[in-house]
Structures are given as C-alpha cells and as structure tokens.
Length: 113
Ligand SMILES: [Zn+2]
Image (cartoon, rainbow, N blue to C red; front, side, top):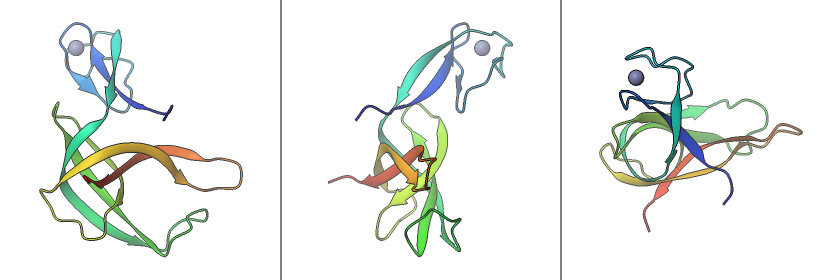
C-alpha cells in the first residue's frame, strides 16, 4: 500500500502532532519529522453512525478513537463486526469515502487476524 498517514514529530521536544501543525503546540518550534502511523492500536471509544454523507456505500459505519503505541490518539473508521473498548486493532489506510471524484484517504482500523 502506498498511502500512509504520518504523525509530525517536533525535532526539538519530540511532541507528536496529528494532523499536521505548523508550530509545535508544546515548544513553538517549526520543524518536524514525519513518523509513519501504523501498527497496533487500542480502541478507546467508538460510535455507530447512521445517515452517512453521500458517497458512503454502507447503511452505517463505526467510527472510533484509538491510541497508537507511541501515545498519539486519532480517529478513523472501524471495520470490525463487534467493537469492544480496549480491544487491539491494526491500523491501515484506505479510501474512506467513495465519492464521484474525491476519494479520501483516512484511517481504517481492522481486527488483528
Ligand atoms: Zn516541540
């Protein structure tokens, strides 16, 4: 897979940011290095969403907030039949909105097989 999501790590203090900030929220530094966000995550919370915007091909979706091993929390789509808070998931990146001309990449969290 070519698409990846990144965290932006402050080169001075190491604070991780996602999405990208132009100024470190901790120390004010303006340079960052990209750190790929991938691997195992822990599900912190989730919601079931109906009435999706046009472009989604499903009646409902789960959206969750997860925590990476580096401590960063992000939100994304869950491809899990029965989400349980605290479960381990694997982070992937994929097309989360199947629009006519603006496919959108985002996090998709899946069961660890
Ligand atoms: Zn900083």
